[in-house]
Length: 339
Image (tube, rainbow, N blue to C red; front, side, top):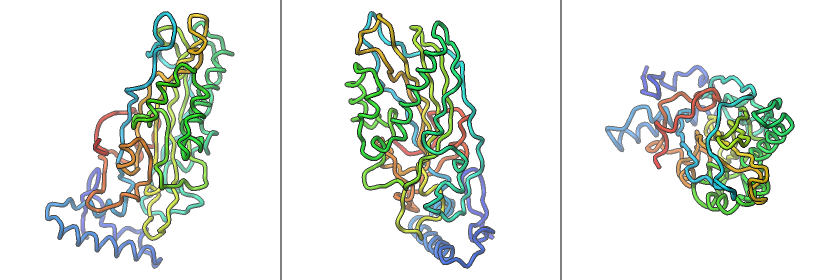
């Protein structure tokens, strides 16, 4: 029995995997296709990694693209600038536990998240939960509740609203931000760094008619200027449509995962000009996992199957479940798409 060098160690030859002992035509075709690709790979390069053939079939060991909002807007009109730091979070919601990625499942367009840890997450905006509000510093519970609600609306507009996702329309987001922040936000959205602010689907690809899956948390604290600062830390799983069913035999070929931790400062009071009062992006960092690398470099998401090629199969050393786990730190380093 062959041993193939895979991500994180040795894995069993996929022809012998118990879940592939089936007479279904798509299984036979997948095995035959993978065998052909392995023969071609050996002819192309004697130095090719043996694990590439396994990755062509088990795409769950996908690429990651790390994001940091280095060009986020700031500087509200006041005597002094809008603050960018934060104190420790004071209120959080509970995140969903992570299960194992199923590498050997036929993808059902009606249930595309089956076989991934996202299957148990909430649907769409229902996953953007708001904690019970409590006073934070000089800000009463009612003011904190209003800040949470605005942050919830911002997360939905940035990551779930189809006008943002599909149409690339900035208005759902801009309408929730302080007017004075709009020029800088528009500049950021025009660049690839805009993915730190919003999620947008690459042109030529379509999402399946199902809600993205969402899990994560929200918390409140104070920035150094004493403004309310709401931190949102959510994971989003997007399911893409696909045409060739014989080419897709793993859920992570069609599901793209994005995690973003974003801070919003809520400016109020007569020390700020009227146009500067409201919500501002303060900082944002995160990653996108199991996506096509080319669009990711442009700040867009597209499914991994669109770049599925044996000689370019991207991989990470971390297990797939790590990228679905909201309790894991966001480490802006390591393997993934080259920038």
